[in-house]
Length: 262
Image (cartoon, rainbow, N blue to C red; front, side, top):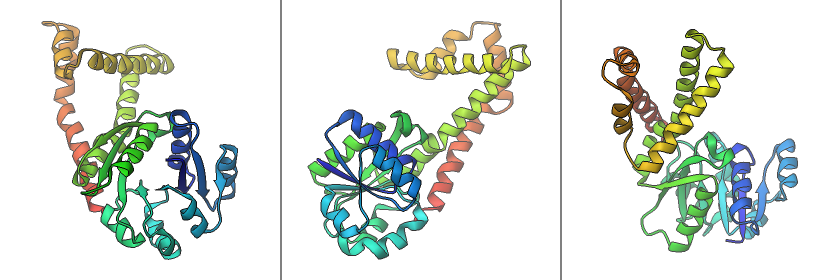
């Protein structure tokens, strides 16, 4: 994979360029982008700008669609005749592999669902391939996914679940950290200090899970000593249906993602 084409140099498109620069520094990037400011950003990142789709797809060994889902019809109308046989990575939310393949007239399509953390190379990246996808395309697509985070290959029917756990889930994590910091503020800390502590607590919890390969419940029972502070706090969380509410939030986001599928 020597030349990667990016259609749409927004947050995700630029994150892919930054990530691949880190893991595959000799990659050449070609970009289609209408916005003048983003075009300048792409040039500053060392990408080559193209105006015509025929030139763009001729140069791209693999093309990443990083446009808005509502723009796919206009894009297909303008570019489909040049896409035949192209290798396409789509990060369009709510847009199936079959929809992309049919609109662009190419069978070689995979689908990625990254999260906001792609911009720092720490996203969960759900990735789904069509049956019979060739090995080279699969490896190249997985390299792109790995450049912006951790790839989780799964059936396309589970992409909506990835949205619930990761795409929307990162917002749930921000909400929890905010709530934890507010709790610290209520207990007497100033908010910035409480937030810094909450962030460090989150980092430590994840590090422990990864080091010991245990489940969260294993550590909860270690922290919650008999008649202690933690068990009282956990009881308050469950009085507020904390576990069930988080589960419901993930399922609600996943169901909404399913409703938006086309």
